[in-house]
Image 1 (cartoon, rainbow, N blue to C red):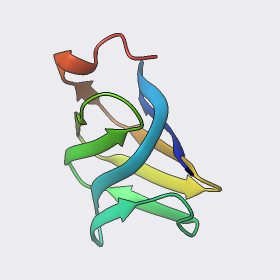
Image 2: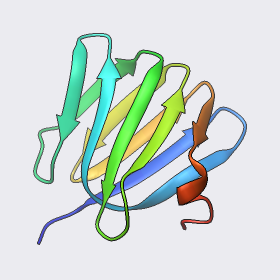
Image 3: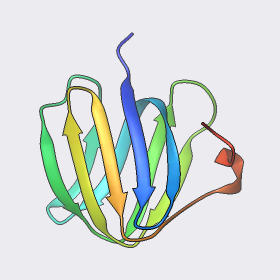
Image 4: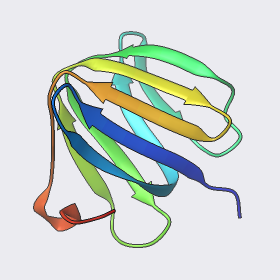
Length: 93
């Protein structure tokens, strides 16, 4: 099964990385959902939640204050001005 390689970083700290089946975020053009095999995208993110469906474990939600969202070759990189992730995902990778 194909999977995404996801990395979330804030301006001053690492937030989360790991394999995922799906990522959703709110961009300047509206909500975007990314699955494996998605075409390359570079988008500006609006403040809000990023939802990650990891390959194993429960859904992860990170709150961001804006930034950008990049997709290329099943790799998703999210660079946020500020980001926080829920306690349930703390310690993940």
